[in-house]
Image 1: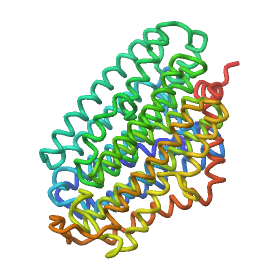
Image 2: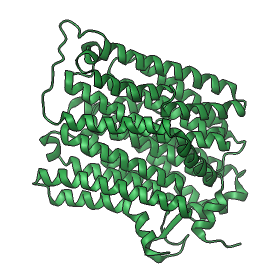
Image 3: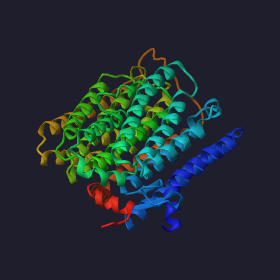
Image 4: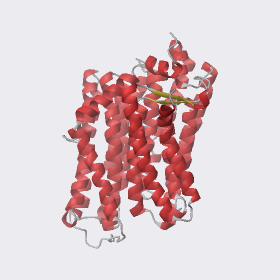
Length: 502
């Protein structure tokens, strides 16, 4: 393995880890911590793009740590799905870092906001790039520790309540994940994902293998916020600072989705199995429950939190249908959703900066006072609802077309109804926050602090990306298509990691 290539895979994990360490060293200097934050996330994004280009041009990249060959040593593997996820982490991380300059108070910075943010990004990228299922567990825990600390930063009562639900269910998930890893090691004697895929291939009908697959389904389903174990998400995502909410909304549940895609294409390929039927049911229920929950809410960030759940349903639908077109749709949907959802949370923070509340009943008149904020909201909102020519339209269209081709009519019907209800929710936010007059006796007040320009710049950049993915849907589709081909070709992954031993 050429060392330049090895560095390409390591950098997306090393940069945020180094930034977290440096931020701790510069604990007393707020300016240095902020500078490190922007420089490190910019570096992370550049490193991520370089890695994606290399994987796209040269195929799956593998790094053997300590020069131990797989499956004995720990490997880092970057295939197209992992590399795309790392790029999306870079984009979200940079947006959050810049937005945080305007919105994170001195007190929160003093509690260790920046080191925790970098640690979270390192955990997320570690999960996307590891080729070892136990290390996936380790990176999940790094992420959980960092996200829990970010969630309770400042220690307000609502945060504590949300954090307890968040951490309890995520610990249940971790316990199941660890049990599954232990059982898997007992069955196969290895934890390298490529080696597992090879050793378990002849034994997919073994009841023990199916039980382990079920454990993974539940553990990752909880992490992804899928039905029926999603209630930790709307209970917690609206409680921390809005920059933290945005980072969580963009990335954390997608790590669960990524793990489902990885495990159920490589180690336990779905085929016509009970797991596939369960996933199809979970996808439909997740879409429906999420969107109905959103329709009932009147708090800006709670509505958006429920929408995370409903949109996860579309990604699971892409995986559960398990046709090449459906996997393309799932990957395209993940790419679109991370950017749109992070942006919607950032816009809710912008509205809070302008009017001092997240409660729809207390808000109003934003479009009259600040028409540009209204337009910036409409771009990701209509994309989330799936209106052309925005990115969400193509994501939904591909997934639904795959459902029609596979003749899962009930799931297609659910997906279409959920799209309409999503539009209803977005129109509700538009009508309440942007269109109606500011209500009489509203307690909302303008929060005047500097840095609004940075907030707007971040939102504009992400909104532009959403439009770009829609307008340039063809190259993004080609990338998703190449990713789906890799995912549906486990021997290609196995040979890249273990070497061609035929």
